[in-house]
Every structure is written in C-alpha cells, then in structure tokens.
Image (cartoon, rainbow, N blue to C red):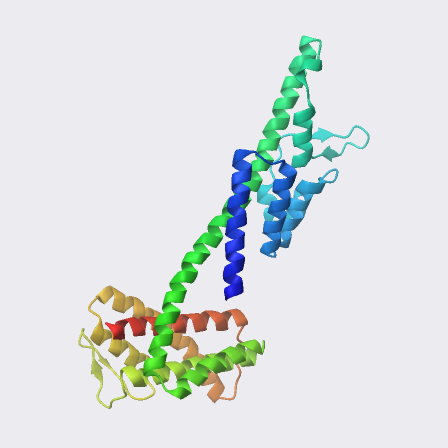
Length: 308
C-alpha cells in the first residue's frame, strides 16, 4: 500500500513538472519528452511508451496511426511532406519540428515570392508543432487528473477501512477475524475455486456480523412500513436490514443500503447454494475483488450506523 501511494505521488509530481515545462517553454522539447516517457513507464503503460518513443526517435515513412492503439486519439496531423522517390508520407517528430522552426531563417530569401513561401512553411511547421505538443499536454493532464481522483477515492476507502477495522475489532469474534485473513490467502491462490471459497467466507462474515447487531429471533421483524421479515438464523440479510431500519431515519438511505445488500446477498447466496450441491461456480479474480470491496463498504456503513 505504501509503495502504491509513493508511486501515485511520483506520477502526480512528475505530471505537474511536465505541464509546467510545456506551458513555460523553458526546456527543449526532447527533454520534456524524456520526462513524459518516464511518466508512462511509472504507470507501466506500454502503449504510451510506444507513442512517446515515436515522438522522440521519429516516425517511420508512411506511418500507420493504428499502431498507436488507444493513443491514436493523440495523433493529430495537419502538415507532412511526400517523399518524391517513393511517394510515402513523411511525418515529423516534435524535436525535428522544433529544430526546423529554430533553424529556418526568413532573412535568407531575396525574392518576395521566396519570402512568402518561407513564411507559409514556417507557419505550417509551427502549427503542427503546437498541435503535437498539445497532444502531449492533453495526455499528461489526463494522467494527473486520473491519479488525483484516484487519490480522493483512496482516501475515502481508507476512512471506510478504519471504520470497518474498528467495528470488527470491537464487535466480531476471533473466528470472524480469521475468516477475513483467510480471504486474503484464498485470493493469493489465483484459482477460480479459491475465489469462490473467498466469497463463501464473505457470506459467513456477514452472518457473524448479523448475529452481533441483530440476533436471530423466531418472531418476524415488522419494518417501518408494516411489512414482515423472517429474521431467523439463516436470514442474515433480513437481520442486517432490520438493524438498519431500526437505526436510521432516512428512507432514501435505507432504500439505497437495502438495494446494495440485496445485490451482494444474491451473489453470495448463489455461490453458497452451488457449493452445497457440490458444484463450483466459476469466479473471476475481478468479480471476487469487487464483491469483497462491496462487503467491506457495507460493514463500514453498519459500523457508522452503530457508532451513532
């Protein structure tokens, strides 16, 4: 976790530095591109590295933008030359454009026609240079914003994690805590069966938490709308909803939480039913991760309500 935070900080700091370089124009574009290449490497973004390498080392003749993959959106071409020998399109990289613009002297043309031609060519080169530089700026800006948003979400989840950890520490049995640890071990196995076992542990954890906040009872629970709900031992979902119904006043919040619990419980119960039949539901790592996060956030919500 600490390494991930460090990497995010590095990406944000380097992004700001590159944006300053592009906007202030203090460095040669080649140096800015080298920093941008490092930015792409920090994110293990091979497609971005491929695109920036073209900008640093030059584009091949008759370049096909499709080779840029998702980064084709940053490829904007308004000026190019045609090779007289083979008729192929010549695309200029940023350092090459910068060099042409810098070395092109308008004073060397004696005729008016020659001068006008040079002015027009220089204008086209500058326009293409600014277009390509703007693409670099757009890419770096998107990287900076995505990592900034990610940091906000990370902070929110960190608060939820602290709330959840404290609740588990104070309200859950040793067995529940061990099940949480077992989930992590299962995920490390990188196998669909292990992912299913991790989600079965999620169901047992929620069952244990429902025992803590709303013990099973033979009589049905009557909610604020007068509806009856079975709250016996197996109905952990109904018992969690009953606890929330008793402890929050907002109907809209109750509806939202109830919907989230319903979705989570259906997924966990389906896996449990298949497991009881000796079947093994194919679970992806991504599905397992999202379900565990959903469970964690639900526990955080329960902890917040209980604390009030």
